[in-house]
Image (cartoon, rainbow, N blue to C red; front, top):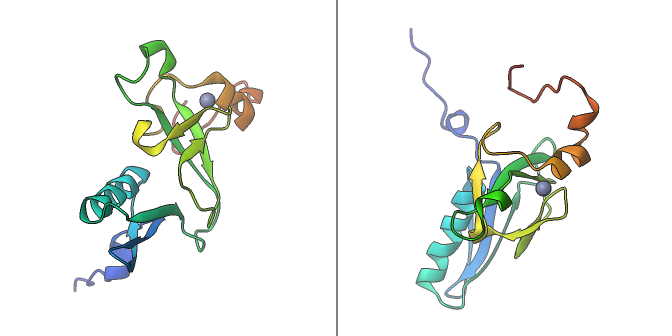
Length: 143
Ligand SMILES: [Zn+2]
């Protein structure tokens, strides 16, 4: 017998986008920061005066670190190291995001990366405490 997949178990969308579009309140769950940007740009296409913010859901079990770098073409390749952006559940994000190292980037400027992609920002790593371990083990990674 095959067990039917429950709809609530199918997708895990850790992020929320909320805003006001054409005078109406809107809210959507999304899977990634890139999806959050895409949703907000969609609302702006519908309403020039739309406003929106996004955040890691307040019911998420703990902080999440997302990895991103300056999108291609906005800076030289040497300036495109992968920064770590810590996100706290329920902390509203609008405008620029601040990486662990202090670098500030706006959502449209960020190219999101998966763990292990891109040249890591050593300042972000140092502040994350990763460099204190001589043989770092990142979650989900192999040595
Ligand atoms: Zn950094």
